[in-house]
Amino acid sequence: MSYDDDDDRPVTFLGRLRNQKAIVWVLIIGLVVLAVGAGTIVALVSALNPF
Image (cartoon, rainbow, N blue to C red; front, side, top):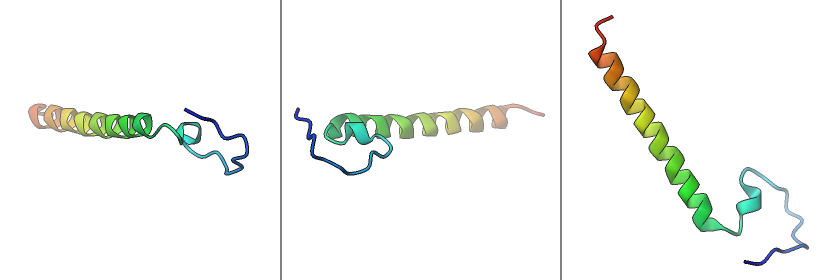
């Protein structure tokens, strides 16, 4: 893992991890899984709740 001190590109979301692509992909996939799981739980609760 090397850090480029001459890199003057702006730091964006997850910019500090730009050279660690595996970690970024794990975070993205994890966020998608959490969002789908939360949506599923909300759908199940709303379908099972008679109110």
